[in-house]
Amino acid sequence: MEIVETLNKTLLSRNREKSNNCTLDLERFKNMALSYSEVENSIAVLSDMHANQSYIYYSETAEVLGIHYAKNPKVIDSIWEEDILHKIHPDDKLKKYVHELRFFKMLEKIDIKDRSKFSVLSKLRKKDKDDRYILVQHRMFYFYSPDSMKLRFALCLYNIAVDQSPYPSSEFLIINSAKGEVVTEDKLTYKNVLSAREMEILKYIGEGLTSKEIAQILSISINTVSRHRQNILEKLNVKNSVKAFSDSFGK
Image (cartoon, rainbow, N blue to C red; front, side, top):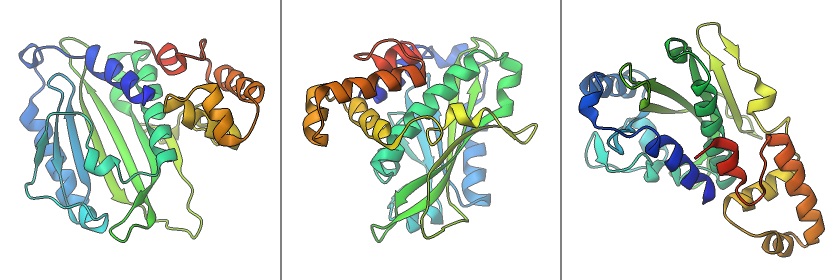
């Protein structure tokens, strides 16, 4: 998936350095993740961007989602918690990745002392233990090294959403928690930006399909696909249709 490769380049290559160059205390952040899992019943995932390693703290939420674990925390050599991510609806997973890249790029433009005010707040469709999609609330926080000014930790929290309406819809927000405000929702969510067809084509672009392959799958002409791709690039403010994601978010 192109978007995952771009995330890896952006979150890992840009931010990796020897952990001893950063004075942030790993144990402090591990205790923070543990506390969220215990107090809020969250699945808490603490990812260390310098070490490309994650600590996953499970709770009863994991049981509802049918995620089994032998150790708590589970330590993995990756920033991708695959046993959690594979439960997400494919369309929501793509939007989640793009949303997180936009969040990172937004924070890069903000003074480092103000970055802690912002976080991601999303509602995702995830399969539960009975293989049915339910809404799960996802929150994500980034923590930057005061020494290198680079991203050091990401903390992701997953909880069963309170609102489980009959026709659940996904939602992707960036919030300023200090002010209790949504930050430019229309630019950071896709429901007000891309049409349903554009979202469909974006999904296939993210999977690396060519315009010809997309046209065959959707039974439309290549010219129609090209027109939709151009619209997507303009709406997402990117320059190149072949490297749309990497050009949009940087390498």
